[in-house]
Length: 464
Image 1 (tube, rainbow, N blue to C red):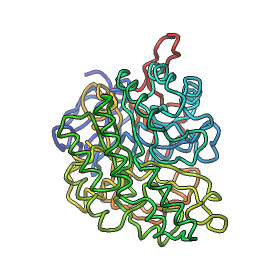
Image 2 (cartoon, helix red, strand yellow):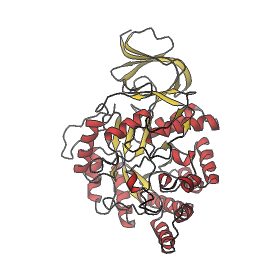
Image 3 (cartoon, rainbow, N blue to C red):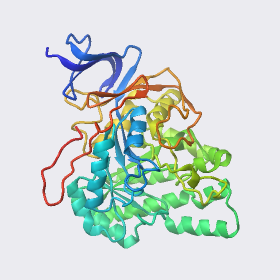
Image 4 (tube, rainbow, N blue to C red):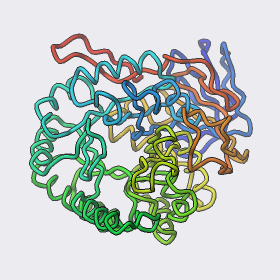
């Protein structure tokens, strides 16, 4: 047999067909062979005895803020953080950079920066905002993974929420383009009205914040979007869903044959509203962390396979934008910093709730790949696929500290949390980027998807 570039030996490998102890031979960035007792030689070998080998995570929901706000997070620190968490592909949301990714010029500039700096592979979301409907087709042709819109107020003047007419016309165009629309589904009317009432009364506690973003606001927005999708034929992906009732609406839509998927985030599963009460703005996000009873329901839904995928919604900022000395809880920037920990959180849930590793691999890798047209090369451990692997110390605990958290800003809800498992290694298209839990110097090896200018320059197919 020909010489391999890398062989991962003796690992317990999570395959689409089950969990087996096999060797993985890698050549030219692809999985060449999967077998027991692989006889081939290799330039490099990884002895995975006692370790679990999973498909690298695909996180479809992160917020890196380059260009323009790299001091919040950028491709270099952000992708290193993702690699340290066993993530081999991420999709960056369009809103926090300056400019936002709402036209081709901004898209191609962001892709260039990512190609120069990213440690892992990535895709880019485009935005749907008032006034950019004519940019949707060029963005789709240029390679966006899909489009993102807000049904609630964004707090970001560069990326405003859609009005109803923009939403409907945008959905119709996105349907014709064969793309997916991701939605932040909270009712602006409900949340803004409740927020104004609380602020006028001087009520700005953690309980008050939760009351301004009730489950009903999420359910109303989900239901409305589903009605619009029925009219327009648009495929939908609901991000960071935080309630059983909203999942019920989405399940009903699926049962009617609608093209819709749903994610939840690790922080809704590991934490609840008590964290906001105790830790303040570090735990602020939208939708908010729910009460413990709702958290329990979400975990049960994950175990039952009702969520298509798990994501981080990594949404960091400098701490001075959250500092309680300067801002009350309503004024502080909202967002959870924690992109490194989604796969670890999923593994914790696997152990505490008896969720099979194959199901974890589906939610964190194969389902995202299938939804966003990467399944021909990513999302599972199989011959011919990209050699994207996460190597796990399943029974080796990992406690989050400032030293082992690779994000630019270390203030995180996860700080001090101990996971029962650890990420020992991460391999991106056959290249070891994390070894013994440490990120190696591999800036720029990550690549984006299929980017081309609308005029028709040659397509560069990289993510694989």
